[in-house]
Every structure is written in structure tokens, then in C-alpha cells.
Image 1: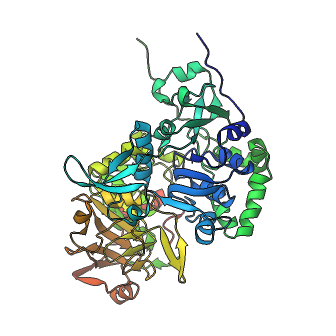
Image 2 (image 1 turned 60 degrees about the vertical axis):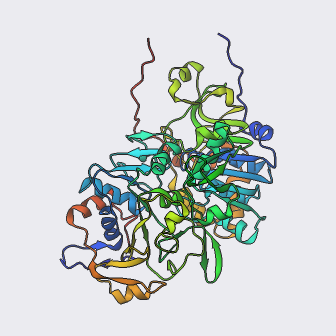
Image 3 (image 1 turned 135 degrees about the vertical axis):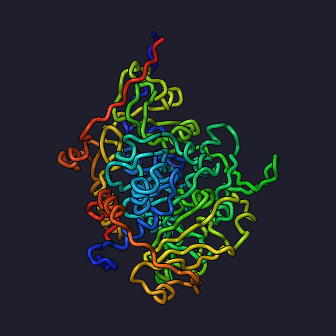
Length: 308
Length: 263
């Protein structure tokens, strides 16, 4: 058996090589689950600029990247803090151009999913009824009303969206990038197929045999993957099913501490600029905090049988 | 704000949030597919399941479908307890496809602003005359566009219930009857109820909201004062039914610390 070449690199390398300034980056495809915070923080540390951020919601990660000045455009259905509502950096950027002006392309969850699905399918658009009559349809140039060629119904064409790079957090992968993920998948699968490059960030790197034992769970095949990063706890404070829970308090603390610009500057210095890596971040977070988020009770599925 | 409503049976005290949850639960009928949402509707789904609608199914746009409500209180739909023992976990389109087919009976939404025709705004708000950028649609526009009935829950005041929303994030009845079909929205779709902290609004044949019930202890005049347009009142205006003991038991089991139902 020929062993596939390893794509395993450090987070620092993955971002340095595959996420240049000006890129369109999909990050945070699984809604509140498995948000690649470690990757986002490394992007901030490496000082990327003029990124287009793509995601249905990325909870407070988009807010942080916007506050750090990494983004010139955001294409999302929702930008804020799922625990507390508002994202103050997003507000400052849109309302006051602090730290810089930002263009917003407002999608809905369904139109963003369809935009990625169209790219994944290799077609220029997908039709839908959603947004008809809304101001989102009027203001988002990627949504165009048209008359159905088969029955003359009014429909909305959602333009295909092909990110330069998708960053996806998963439970486990092999070094070739074949990835197992489970739980709520959001737009991860279409996002991986739609993007020019894919960075897989895994809680665990496992042997190819582990992945091959359950091909139905290999939702991202390795040949689509450009780089693999092993980053345990890389999604904190968001949850990873089967690995750790959601750090609800962290979202509330972020909300309270970033209300004003100087508060955000202190926050980012403490949690991102002031730590050199995810390990340093975790050390700062403290063992008692991570211990409190660990799985309390395992809930293993019954194995499936691929025998013949 | 911990004001509790004194009910007519003095032994039975409940919060406004609990009353709204019970009212929301009654919008769910047995056997229906429900786009659940978070906060109060999430609890309402649990109440409906355990009382009058054991056959209801809960759908979450993250890609989760649940028969049994989660075993712990949820703060977001992506919380691990919402995935454990789910009926189905998959991607967003696998759930949203059911919505677009018209198979979802009722969807719950919150909003910063709702207007007399049930249009919702969660994109641009205003505070003291200043434009405030809000988080945006999420799945709200999809649910408002495509589910058979949409139920909105929000606090009742003149800043939230406005004559005309400044931005239609999620379409209600637009400018009145017939507007939705002119836009091309599905025939069987649209706003069904607005459950506020003061009462329940429903929609007339002309597509405009009217006051259908007031919560116990709330005066009609107070509701009208707190509404940003001249709200019509139903001839057969009723008092919103209080949550009964069975409903309160479930609410307090799901939210024992009153995290979502405090006020």
C-alpha cells in the first residue's frame, strides 16, 4: 500500500502559506460548533489585511478579526455574539469605520449555504424563494430576482461563492487530510468542495485505517485538502462534540470587555497578540478552566459493519 | 427586572417569560415540524412536546432534527446537549430543504423591530436617533419567507413595535394583503402571531396585526400606548391564558434557574 504524503504542518505554517492578505476565507462553517478560533487568532497575529470573511455565523471570531483590522469585507448571515447578541467590533467597523471601513454583504443562512452549494456543484447560481420581498434581496448584489424558465415563478438566483480557502475544524483526520466530523455540519461539506484550498484543523490526528473504517463519516476527502493542522482545543471557546463543551462564560466576558475600543485592545493583547501559540493560549486559560469543559460522560455510537 | 405577575389563583405565580413560553407552546400543534430557535421558543418546544404536542419535531438550521428536547438547558443550538441523541445530524441544506418545500409548519423568531404588517428588522436599528448595526438575518429571513406560520416573540414597547420597519430583514405581510404572493413568496406562508411581553397580536385578512389577547394584569390602554402605531383591538379580545401547573412544571424543569424566563 502506498502511503499518501503527509500534509501535516503547524498552524503558523498553514496560515503563512495559504492565507495571504486579500484572500476570501471561509472560517466557521458549523455555526456555533467547531469554530476555528486558533486559526483565526493566528491570522490576526500574522497581520493579514483586506480579507473577505465568509461564514453563516462565526460567533465572536468574525468580531475579533474585524476588530483586529484583518477584514475589508464580510459575507455572512449574522455577525455577533451568540450568547450576548451584539458584536461591538462589527458595530464599530460598520458604523464608524474603526479600525477601518468594512463592506457588508448580508446573506441569510440559506442563501449563504446555496452560494457555497452552487460553487460545490460547479454551477453559477442556485434558485430559491427565500429573501423575496426583503431588503436583503435589494441590497445584496449576489442575489438576483429572475423568472423561472420552467414555470415562470419568481425566484432568486444566489450567485456561486468560491472562497480562496476554507478553514474547517474537525474531530479527527489522517495526515493526508481525510477527515471525520460529526454533529451539526452547517455548511462545512459544501464549503470544502466550493473552496480552492482547504485547511483542516483536527483535534486528533489518527491512522488512515481509523478514517477508512467508517467512510460515511469521511465528509472531507483528503484530496480536497491542502494542509492539515493538529490543534487540540483549537476551537475553544466553541464546542467540539465528543471533545469539549462550549465555554459560555468566555463569550459573556468578551461581550463585557469589548464594549469600548480600549477594552477590545486590552482583550486582544491579552488573548491573541500576547500569546505566541495555541499552547500559550491554553496555558493562560488555565487547566481548571479546560478541565471544566471536558466531556463528563462519553456517548459512543455503536460501530457500523462494513464487512462483506 | 424580576416583576412577577400576580395570578388570579394566588398560589400560582409565574413570570412574564413563563407566560410567553406557555403562549408560544400553544402555537405548536401535535405532529408539526417546528423551526425552534433559541431562548423562549426552545423552552416552548419542550413544553409542547411534554403536554399537548408529543408528536412535534424540532428542526435547527445548524443541521439538527430532534424528537426529544435536549436533556439540558441550551444557550445556543450548537451546544453539545442539542446533538446528543438527536434524531438526525447533518448539514444546513438538509434541514433548510424541508423548510423551502413548505413542510415546516411553524417557525419562531425574535426581532429588534416588528411593524404593523409583521415585517421584521434585525439588520439596522436606531438608538437615540443613531443608526445601530445589528447582527443580521441568520436564518430569520428564511424562516419568515418559507415556513407556513411564523411566530415572533419580543418585548413590547414603541421602539420595538413600530409602524414601519426601517429595513425588512425578514418579510411579514409587506404592505398588506396580497403582498406576499406578489413578491413570489409561497402561498402557504407568513406571520401568524406576535407574542409580546404585554399580549398576543394576530393578523387580519388585510394582513395587519391586531391585539387578540392581553396578558393577565395588563391594560389594553397600556398596550396601545406602548405600540408605535394605532393598534386595532379584537372585538372578542381575551386574556392570554395563564400557564397551567403542568406547563409550569416543564418550564421550571427545563430552565430551573430561570436563565431565560426570569422576567
